[in-house]
Image 1 (cartoon, rainbow, N blue to C red):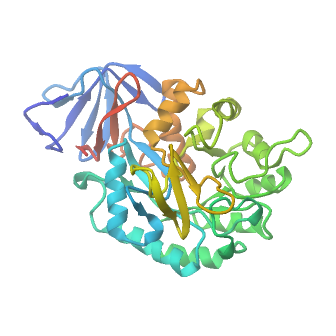
Image 2 (cartoon, helix red, strand yellow):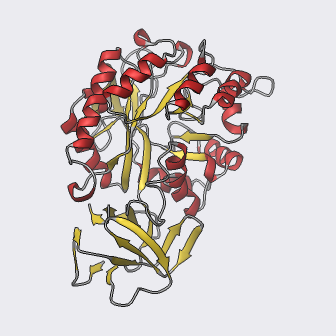
Length: 399
């Protein structure tokens, strides 16, 4: 790749045009042309470079929007529940090396004061300039509260001692602690008052996803009708499908107007299950997430997910004691994109969309990221023909 003399590597000056083999645009993949960037934001896609404009020539690379991970707990030995702003910044910078330009730090079921502390640390990291743009780290786009409003029957790697009934009061307290960054909260659909909670959370501008739940199809439908917009790591942590009891999986496959997260690491779901989900919902209704914990990017060994001991071996993270359930993953989003393509669940264009536009829209941040479109942050990745990330750009600057 090469910059014109008017654009310095990592610090472009003024407007420039990105030239590449092709572009993954909102309407689909197109060959050739260019996309303009000015002031850290995208301009128009054009057939030709505007006269006199500096050029960033990415050669045979294909350009996609920067990846958007909306369910991730940690990376490189750091956990959001550490309540350490510096650690959150390190996660941001590590994720950028895997094409992630926007992420939603995700909490776990824990005592309310610990969740609040984690929210405050994310707000501190987002405010201190350690992420995005010149800092080289992925933008923090919000906070996802994964817990404590779950059922013990499908708690997964969540501490059952801290499970609580849905509470708008707690949500408001955590929203205040985060400085208004909470964009997403999860709830078990069968919990008493769950539909009312969904409606109240949506009124606060927070997306609601259903998960860690033993709900019936009717209970899930009641929450969707009240404002819930998606499902947490579909197939995992939820009542399975039966022809006489469709359950939560049936809801994730069949309800209209919702988004289904899926962890495509080859451990959480069989490739055939991923293919079924994408065929049922389409790429606009499936969001690739990692659910990555602190062992992501680290060697096999012993780690923690919140307070729970975890052993990572051969690419799988499992609770060290008791059920040995999967405890998050060590997946990266660039690998998830390649997996879903390699499994025959999606085309290149669909795989990219499920890691960019779909999660951004489902989490209420589609107006600022997830698309190569005028006015969005100029976050983009260069991909080779195998969908490997060869370069990441955040707010128009190389990370």
